[in-house]
Each structure stands twice: as C-alpha cells, then as structure tokens.
Length: 129
Image 1: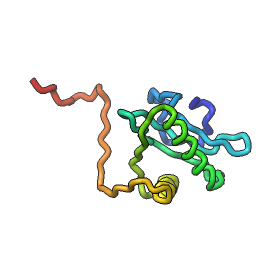
Image 2 (image 1 turned 90 degrees about the horizontal axis):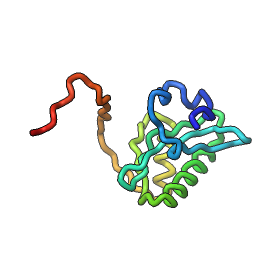
Image 3 (image 1 turned 45 degrees about the vertical axis):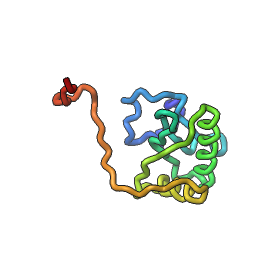
Image 4 (image 1 turned 135 degrees about the vertical axis):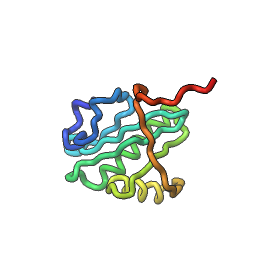
C-alpha cells in the first residue's frame, strides 16, 4: 500500500523503516489519484491517528472525505472512537481540529512531549524486581 502513495506524501517521514499495517492506511482520491493519506492504529479500542498528510494541490473537501471514510471504517471495526495528538503548526492538523470542533468532538489542550525509543537502546531501564 505504501508503494501506491505519492512520494510527496511520504517525503521526510521514514515510513519505509517501520512495520506499517496496511489495514490502517487510509487514502483519499481525487480524479483517480491519491491526494491524501491518514495513518492510524488500534490502541485498546481507540483508533489513534498518527499522521495526516495531503498534497498541496488537494481540494479542501478531500480531507473531510478522508476523515468521514476513516470514522465509518473504524466504527465497522468496533472502535469506540479516535484520538490524535495534533501539531498546531501543521495545516492539515489544524484542519482536523476545526473539523472535529464543528462535529462536536472533545478538544483537550495540553503541553506534551512525545517520547520514542527503540527496544535496542543501550541504556534501557532495568525491569523492576
């Protein structure tokens, strides 16, 4: 599935280094071309939106169509809802916030730090004994 996504949407992401589940890649088409992608995962019954990217040439309504399809599909899969940590300086994530607000979703403002690590990290904390 990643092979079908335009390079402009994958640029700078490093997705080829990850084991992305193709069942959690959602795309939107415009004039028979992929113009947007949403990557998510199931986390204990919540769909976590990891990334939303749209081509600059994508019409504004395509993001709304992508989100509607995403919600319809995760509902069929038994998810109780979705959540996303949005970066306020990214236009697509700002648009997600506006759409969610109009739809009556909960918006919770907070300061967060994303922590990531490989399991191969050299100084991983020892398990408690």
